[in-house]
Length: 490
Image (cartoon, rainbow, N blue to C red; front, side, top):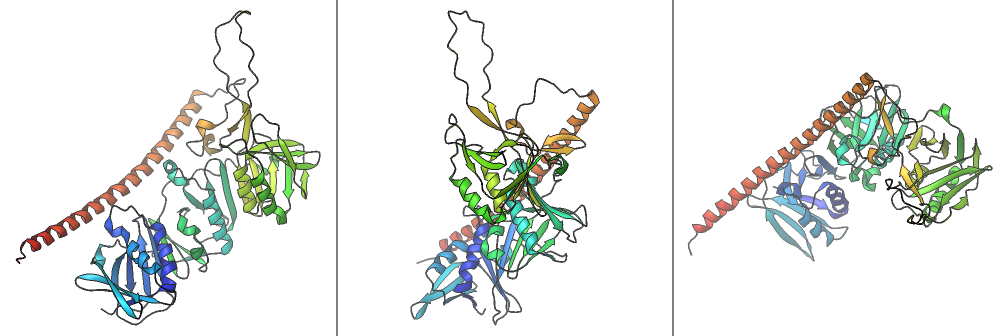
């Protein structure tokens, strides 16, 4: 075959992108390789995969030569390219005995041979038959912001991505949540027949991919594709029903206090928050205080110290005085998204950061005293211990709830264990039939999660079977080599 020429200037960034889905500890040897191919039109394309995702990059200019495919180890190719200059090129080709990489070595060409692997062993790239849907730059930015708010909890896999809600064909939404904060953006209309969840992945955050032109979306039966001018990312879609994300969104009619920040000074405000002390390493508590027509940030270095109050200039506000505590990381995230309007209902209701069609709903942190110890047997005056000092305020997160058939449930499974305790002064009693319905809905949710878990387990089993078959082929090859060596006579 005629060698395939790979310019180093294009190959180096291509290997960086391809490496973002290559697991360095792969148990299936074929997944540590990349596929280099020259099409019938002369275009050169490189592909890598981890069986759940495929990344392909096409080089800028076509070359001459017949169609050809070579599989090369990613690690070896990366090490070789590091020593090459930007204006140089390498050549790769496949022979009946091995795959060959030729690289510049002074005024000559060096040569490195790697074991030959049949291109047929490389996992097939899923074919997408549906038409491509262009994604405007504003929608692409919203998808990336949503992924920054998605859950990373593998037990709630349905929340591990950006949800495009296409139930209303005239007003699509991009949504993501992790149970502590929820992001949504609207004013989009896509020709989607059904809603879809785009799994979050570090490749989508890569600058080279984001700067390579307009995104285009293709949705298949089990996979979806995001492509740019030269790059293509294919991933398995997330199956399952996304929770009713509208349930925890506060009704704007209930808003009591509205704070509007200067959009030109959001970056300065972020830096101010970063410099403020933090006494709470778990919830990173920050106070937001509206009093006497002034908006102030509250923080302290130690729990027993008084709050440090820092005024924020150039703020417009209206409504009753209010103090609310929240995780500062969410405040910084909202400001980085350009959300400069803060709507408050009361100290225990969700905060709402908005700007245009975007919003970020954040659950507050409730400051409560440490839980008291169980009551001890009565003691006499003589034996009574000294009264301990009052405990310092301890932050407690409040759970974000969704609604299922009128009943409220936590979005994330790990939220209920840390949610604020209910008010025991006025216990709420429910009829038996309503309690039974709640139990049925909870069981349905459990079954859905179990089905999703079985689906993932089936994928892992299929991958293990592929690895076993590949290992058997390798062992068979070693046995044949040993037999041939045993027949050699000196």
